[in-house]
Image (tube, rainbow, N blue to C red; front, top):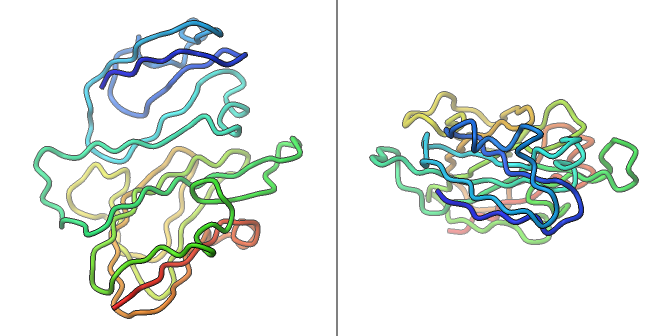
Length: 212
C-alpha cells in the first residue's frame, strides 16, 4: 500500500494505520507529524488480513478523532475459505460533540444520525450479508451493535477464517472491529442499533429491510 499524504489543513496531522508497518510509517511520534504544507509517503504491506482502521495521531488525539479524522480499510485473505457474501457493508460507529463540552450529542453509524431508519438497508432473505464493523467513537468507553430477530457469526478483527462467536450483540472499545456475517430467514423490517439506549435515541439506529 502506498499513500501520498499532503497536509492542507491548519494543524499538524498524520496517518496511523492499525496493521503491520515499520516504525517510520507509524505516524504517532511528534517528529512524524506533518505541518501544514508538508507531504509524506506512507508505504507498507497489506497485512494482516482483516478489517482495520486508520486515524490521525495529531495531538490532542481525542480532538482529531472526535472531529472525524479516521476511516476503515479491508485486507482480504489470499486464500479465503469463508462463505462468499452476497452483499458487503462497511459500518463505522461514531459520534459528534456539537457543543464542544467533551461529550457526544449525536451518535451514528457512518456519520449520519438515523440515516438507515430513513433509508433501510435492503437485503434478500437467505442471502449472506457481511458487515465490516468498527468503533471509532470518542468520549465514551464502549459502543455496541445489536440486531433484532437474528444472530450473526462474528470474526473479531477479521483475522481468522473461522468465526469465534454466534450472537446478536457485540461490544467494542474504541479501535476494535469485527466482521459480522448474517442471513435473514424471514422478510420484513428489522432494527439494528447500539444496545445503549442513549446512543440509539440520539441517532445510532437503523433498519434492514428483508425482501423475498
